Amino acid sequence: MNFLFLEPFYGGSHRDFADGWVQHSRHRLELITLPARFWKWRMRGAALHFAKKVQSPSDFHGIIVSNLLSLSDLKALWGSDCPAALVYFHENQLSYPVPPGESIDYQFGFTDITTALTADRLLFNSETHLETFLSSLPGFIGMMPEYRPRWVIEQIRAKAAVLSPGCNYSPGPANLSSWDLSKPPLIIWNHRWEFDKRPELFFSVLDSALSLGHEFRLALLGENFQVVPRPFLTAREKLGKRVVQYGYEPSKEKYREWLRQGVVVVSTAIQENFGISVVEATRHGCYPLLPKDLVYPELIPQEYHDDCLYSSQEELVEKLSLILANPGQYRKRREELADHMEQYSWELVIDRYDNELDRLAKRFKA
Image (tube, rainbow, N blue to C red; front, side, top):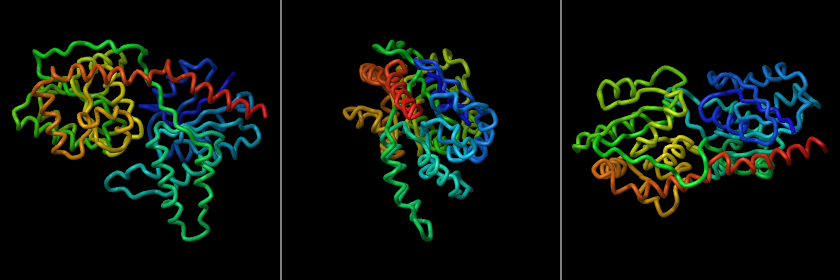
């Protein structure tokens, strides 16, 4: 069957997700995209662009869109030509933290709500994300001075489900490289270079590790969609030759090679609904150190929570110091965690995604 995939923010995890589904699906997915910039304008105006870009939407058995597109606007413009629609929520604007110096724009939260209401099916990338979105709705709607549409909560819940994104690695036992213990351990940062990943806290933790006498190398990976944040510029100058990679690595193979060399991957995020970067790094052999909240307790097996999750900056410094002092003792645990991440391989999740499209197409026939 033929499906239309509209992605108004084709970059980062949105790009990887779209490419993965298109590549692995048993159906034909026609992907139409816009560059990953100006996300606010994408939410406001991408529907108008796609409405004219696609000449015959009724030719498709269904459409897939990410939540950075106003589906209600698109449906209004296409009218009866619009096929059944599935929306994938990578993030939402009700719970996303506001950057320093900015104030919340409630219109984006309402766009998420109307997109959810006009969709035929909603998929969220984690249980944590779905419950965070649903639990944010009562307070958000409660801010309205009158005529509060509380009915939307159950209507959205009734059509929503969780389906973790696929990751681009093969299933089977993880094939890990041996750590080169003749060199200082390599720390991996492979997250977006943005405020919600708290790079200033990450570099503060590294400063603490150095003050305790620990050495390391550092690979600063991940995408940056705007100007380079000041914490990265300062860290590059301060850490000098310890920084062995600075900036996004476009080659997937070279990127995976950095992960294979990594001893530990650290997250200091205040917003994470799934964490593809952490899953990929762990799958390729990095030992994860992650906040004890957000989606991370959902990703890491319960028996590893005490080892991998932290509740304070001091605890992160302590756990990182233990790894830097004796990385060899973490080899077996990193192998078990790498095998745990097998379940997110695209080859293992694709049938569930395509089954969703099968059900969507039945709505088209009806």
